[in-house]
Length: 194
Image (cartoon, rainbow, N blue to C red):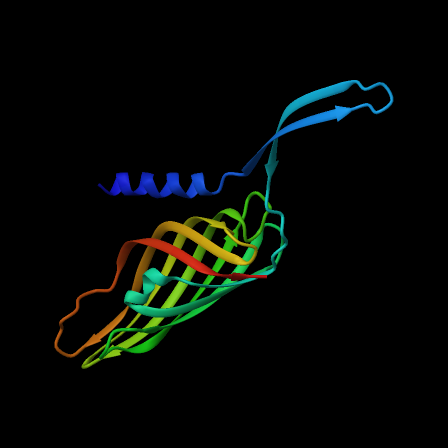
C-alpha cells in the first residue's frame, strides 16, 4: 500500500511538471490581385513552452501540517542551483503550547532555482509543553521534491522524504517514552513567489 501511494505521488509530481506544448492549426488563402491566382495553404504548428520567469524569493505554507501546526516558511535564492529557507510554526491543538523553527537548503540540479526537481537536507527544532509534559524534539531530514508555478507567482510544491527525530522528554507521569527514530515526511506547499 505504501509503495502504491509513493508511485502515485511521484507519477503525479512528474506529469504535472512536463513542459507545455501548443498546437496551432492554420489555414491561409492568398489571392494575387494582379494575376488572380489563388493559393490555399494549411499547416500545423507545434511549439514547446517553458516557464523561465526569474524568481528570487518565495513564501509558502504547508496546509497538511495545519492539523498540528500553523506554519510559514520563507526561501531565498543564493545561486542558480541553491536556495536557503527557514520557517516558524506554533501548535494548533488546544492544551498544547510552544513553537518550532526549521531550516532547509534546496539544491536544484537543473539550475532552475525555485522551479522543478530539488533535493533538500533540513533541520527542525520544536519546544512543546502541555500539562505536566514538555518535549524538545529536533530532527534532521532529507527531502526530494518538485516545485512548480501554475500561475505567474502562485507556487505549489510536493515533497517526500524521511526525518530522523531525537530530543528530550520531561514527563512527570512517564506517559511518553523515548523521542528517537525515523519517520516519513510528506510536504505539500502553496505560496507566493517573486
